[in-house]
Image (cartoon, rainbow, N blue to C red; front, side, top):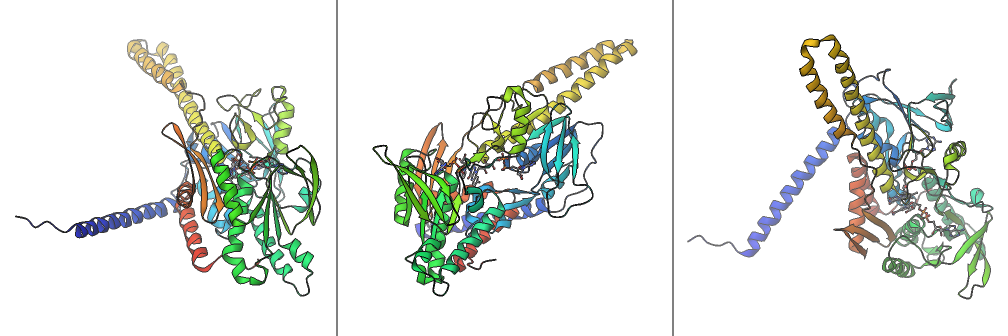
Length: 515
Ligand code: FAD
Ligand code: NAI
């Protein structure tokens, strides 16, 4: 009779098999990723008889559209002052060097070069959209300027995907004295300032009040941007700064100020409580029901509303101030809205219909943070909207081609009287195909959940799962957060770089040099 192998032996065999499969699978995945990223073959040249499709922006909405668009159907022109796509969910990690900024950037040239038909890219800002003349005025605002730096681009179809700018609500001093957290440059500026505050605080003969001020890091806005940044900053201090500069270990302080009664209002009550208790453990001070009213170069003035409704003013000295109070409409979008009577009641951006067509216009669509479609301004929404528009435009091109075929066949009915039955049959087939293609359903957003990092290797997640909601927080959620964001990175190159950054900062600590 065959001898049965011990259980332990069977377990190791299973374990080795699993390891082999993972190594082979991982290597194949990486190899495919590298192959995919290589310089591709030549592209089709744009066809001047096709329609001009102009896309403004290179963010979540625009890039998701470009990824799925069959560019051979149009003359596609992309206009944006930023010649790369930015993976914003990992931007707070760049402020402390947990992730290096280039690891979350993907050049737009590489994205466009992988399309079947060539796409034109102009590094410029759209300054005005004229829906009457169907032109966009563009301006090259980069440091290097050529003889031509202001011009107009005409469009047959236009997609506005320019995102939003930082909201300041006109609060005095905010623009002059605080750092924002929206772009790569913002994260770099914050990273520099953190270490500048630390080095200045340890300068010879620094007064105790000045040390206290310089090491007070204030974050305004308890939405996900403010919370994630506060968590990353406290990690940086606990895991690195404190070890390299021990003399400041009891003086570094992070304060998060929020006007509403709690932080992360879009998360469930249980996760809000978990975040607040985690922040308490991490020694991050949360000041809720406190609205900042004024900012100077060294102080923040905020109004606290007590339980009895009584308001008290507080003045807090700070070294670094990060302003994360949400989105405001960009000037080019505001200007377009002012030209369209149907947009007069819209405040937060371009009101769009269920096909993302800008209300009151023809041939203009909008996606992402600059569009008001009834959803939160998130990357998830912007990328689903972009993908929807790609499907819509691919279908429109297909149906136009079939309509042309039907038109040609119908005209040939008169020229070839002998073939009438055959041609009529062909026309009928095309018409059936056309009806199927034209049956495009309106845009429908599928919410996959919300995730946020809250520091000390913990995250919170409200995930939609099997028609229900699943709220979780802690260390395991942090691993889920990391794997979810890693899988969402734009390319294999980004994924490899982010993993290497994580390993590097774990092994050697974050880099505390000030560039
Ligand atoms: P953007 O991605 O901002 O892109 C706008 C593009 O337009 C940019 O390329 C810009 O350069 C360009 N542009 C600007 N002005 C002009 C102009 N005048 N002419 C032409 N081009 C112009 N969402 C999530 O769902 N999950 C997250 O984890 C998450 N984390 C975030 C973390 C941070 C720090 C921030 C700031 C946001 C985060 N978001 C997250 C929100 C998400 O980034 C936005 O909702 C998303 O970027 C919106 O996409 P968009 O295409 O509308 O705009
Ligand atoms: P937000 O709009 O979500 O939050 C801003 C917060 O600032 C609000 O809670 C508001 O009450 C507060 N505020 C406004 N004025 C204030 C003042 N004067 N004083 C004190 N507090 C004030 O903005 P945020 O965090 O920048 O996010 C913008 C968008 O990006 C949101 O839709 C968000 O969901 C998305 N996002 C998602 C992330 C994620 O899913 N992990 C991460 C970052 C952003």
